[in-house]
Image (tube, one colour):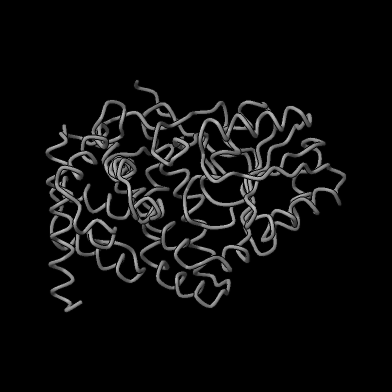
Length: 370
């Protein structure tokens, strides 16, 4: 592959109370919408989306998300959509809900509208989904014909979500430049199906810049449930900049390690995507032989956001080395994005880097008397 490829959603809208304008933005795109949300999100934003649609003359069919972006859940919701003759699919909620909505829409070939209620992942803008088993183990990436047609990001809703979700999104987004930088050096193929573009490189760099400048301020803002300029900037970085940057810039070691962690049972299964990506980023930095000051910059930033930086933080303190090796094996299996690093890595390499990242963070905490 020698072509450079950049892909993106049709329209991105961000601001306070935009969920109440869903009907205005969707009007003219279709007549029957399948609105997918879990029972908690339905009360937070799903009903507001449905009400706005109906006020604009668009029928809203409620579809309750079961909690896992699995093939069986996707097929179940797609059948519901077919039975209702929907021509619009709207996902309202977090990353797995949104990934499921994109998959359902791919089967129904309608208009795809994404309404994230947290800024916890960069899933909203992409033309792909992360597919898990019914029990939550990573299975594969699924790629679609097009990116979502419309993204509506309500910063007032996001400000009301638990601060952990924003911090997790920052961690996910902070991996964007780290991974894109590796993919560019390796001249590897991105999720968009080609080499990284200059636009993707610039967006990925800007994403990291915004996060370091405003991430902590945004995190403190959501603790008070207020929308500030810092929060607006970080929500855009977590959602739009990271979404465009990872898809057209590429994934590498950080997300491969995240995927590896999904093979483990226990409390880590309940950690967020971003929490696992944060540690995966430290692992990639260790693999890349980055200098101490650079690694400590990331550790320090994660600590300010209450993100995990050690195996103990990930509830893996007493995990046998054999189980961590299974993580490393999964992270380096055929088809994983660790292959996009500009050097070959083995499971043994990744295991050593996991243990090294853990020790680097322990040493930094000790230096700060934490």
